[in-house]
Length: 141
Image (cartoon, rainbow, N blue to C red; front, side, top):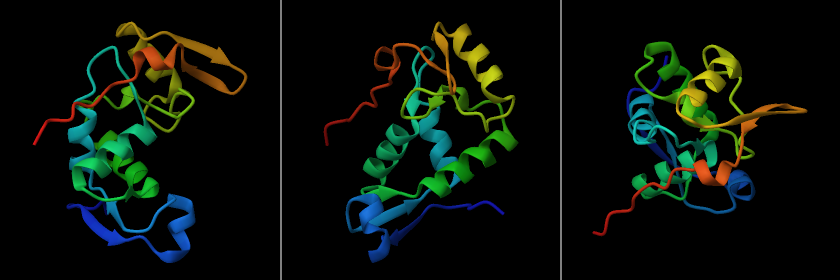
């Protein structure tokens, strides 16, 4: 069963070293993750770290659970193709093999958006990652 709503929890003291901070952590639900992913325009990508950082900023928390984020991504993938999950990559630009169709489908979809992918010893990754990274807009409050 997937979470239906976001949950904010305290970062456990034994996890503070992993997250690099104390405070609160978001356990995001699929709809929250999908809303942010939908903002990534064609021709751009976001790393999973950038996605979690944006989720944390919007929820006004210090961290976002990487496990729950991955669970939300899998739930989205099971439900719809309307969310451009293929625009998400690892920190190194490596493609995500666990998405439907694997890295081959992701590579094909990125190619249609003019995002070049190159073969490496460990798999495929976005070529010139920095040029393709999305910049989430921060509105002045």
